[in-house]
Amino acid sequence: MSYIHRHLEDTVKRAARNFAAVLVTGARQVGKTRLLRELYPRLPYISMDDVILHDMALTTPHTIFKNYPPPVILDEVQYAPNLFTHMKLMADGVYSDKDVFNHYDKKTRKKYDKIGYRRKGLFFMSGSQQFALMKNVSESMSGRIGILNLLGLSRRELIGDNCRLPFIPLNAYYKKRNPGKAASNKDIWKFIQKGSLPEIHALKNDWEMFYSSYVSTYIERDVKQLVNIGESNMFYKFMIAMAAHNGQLLNYTSITRDIGLSPSTAERWTSILLASNIIYLLQPYHNNILKRAIKTPKVYFLDTGLACYLSGWNTSTVLERGAAAGSFFETFVIGEIIKSYTNAGREPPLYFYRDKEQNEIDLLIYENGTLYPLEIKKHGDPSSKDIRAFRFLDIIPGVIRGTGGVICTYSQLMPLSGEDMIIPVSYL
Image (cartoon, rainbow, N blue to C red; front, side, top):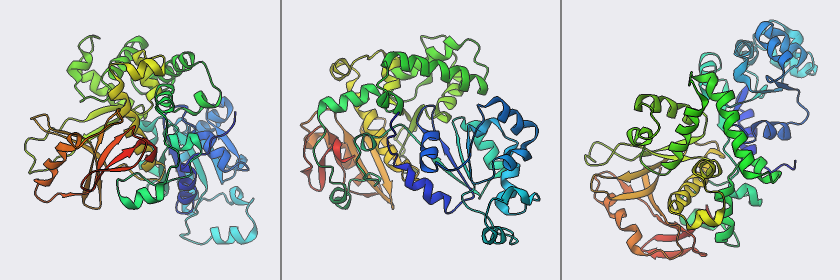
């Protein structure tokens, strides 16, 4: 399978220069292991899916690094919690078994033997169960590990666009971004419906069969190890209900009404989808002055292909013309912006605004004390009416309102009103 270069590669290299360990987390099948093995093809590779290695890691963890001396790649490391203590000692340069480091040259070993010296770039780890991972990381590797989150393919990655800038609606960004030819509606909707998992693009798999297998494997291998869900079919129904509310306010009563699940269970299961990088909760912007702003997040699936499968949208043409087209286009746009930040190793500074009078701004980017407002429209003919809600930011004491605009399917970057712009999706 041909490899599609990931924009997180540069961020992994940067983290390796600053930390003893680098952990790449992300949902199943997003390409975590492939990224590390392509980036470091000569390093030893240990998979905890290997029964013998897994048993060794659990029973005699000290022997793992004798047989596979660092720097080393460890796949699905959450299944081997006993390794973290040894990694901590090795990272701190106080590991008693010097044989582990005999593969280094004499000069490097001498440097590593210095008291208090912390090694860098020893362990490159991947894992998809953040509950188990974060517990071990916080207990053993605090201050020694760089944690990065890999999502599905961005459109930039898929078409070979090398721009790695996090999206922000500023002229300085537009000048550097220069995406060239505008994306066609047909290509955008194909990407939305097909999804962002690398294998579905690289192998041109049967779409429905792929996602059916994906959901089954996710529930059986990931979800069931985290919580007692009883029948797998109930969690599957819950995922379908969540997909039906994609792009909406997170309302547990509404989500569970038709599937016979309690809101408290739905809340607990939502935390699993969140930790598995299946969904993203976009938080509302509010402060002590905004008494009428709502405080409920909105839910978005991080892979639109999975949301389409769960919702029964089997072709891009039907999806584009369907009742859910607006929410799926919004999900795609927000997902692309999220990826532009996570690929740069940054937490996305994203919010939305809605008050009790239903005034709403689809997306707010908070950067350097400034709020940049954005509306997201699937049509190609935005007007100043689309950004009327921006004025609510101007009357909030202490808020600095930056430039914004409407992200849409128009083909050119154009002024809309004042400094706010019409922003083609190609600029994401």
